[in-house]
Length: 120
Figure 1 (cartoon, one colour):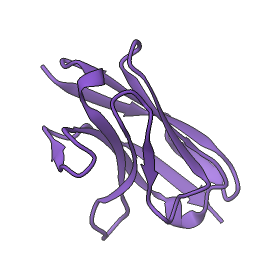
Figure 2 (figure 1 turned 90 degrees about the vertical axis):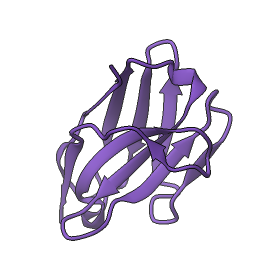
Figure 3 (figure 1 turned 60 degrees about the vertical axis):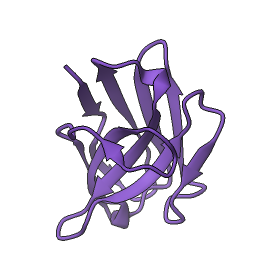
């Protein structure tokens, strides 16, 4: 059974940092591109960061470029999102998901996500 479990969210002041984790099970992590998404209240889910199968390439949304870092550990079956210099507009529920390519849609169901709240 495929499972994605996000953790590491919380309440932080603007300018602070958080590190999110996505624990994957039920599939072979290295065979997938992995991405982080977020959904703020009243807004659609948006793509935040993507990392290729072996971690050789990463892509970021303009809104987080230079502040967020995506990484992966295929041995530990875990994907990370290091978030620095957080802003109130980063407040959202953060999700991870797998993709067959960097241009493909997310596949499978979503996890429960982890809430990130940034206070001003």
